Image 1 (cartoon, rainbow, N blue to C red):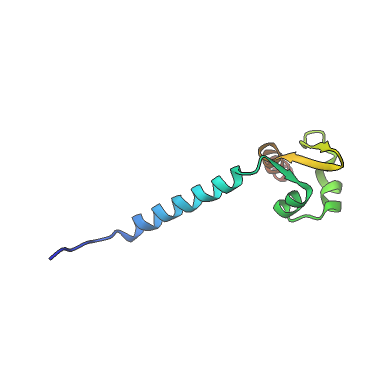
Image 2: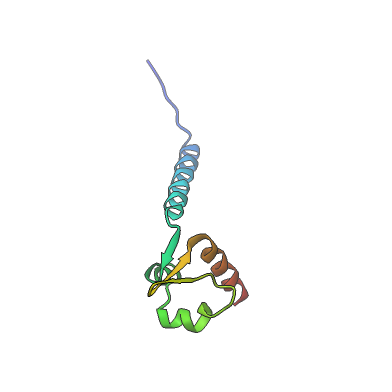
Length: 86
């Protein structure tokens, strides 16, 4: 007879590690955010974004044609800094 014992805490830790890795991989898929993605990620309206931080010199943005693009990594770093200052 074969007996198998599973450490539930270790299984849970492994599961959470894999979920975190998958989330990081998904986030890394974006090189740029558009204005819709920026609004989604900040849970703010476009008017609120413009009012709060859009015109901050440190906020990374580039207008390509008629569309604003935001480098994903730099924008995330800025937003984390900005919210800590509030």
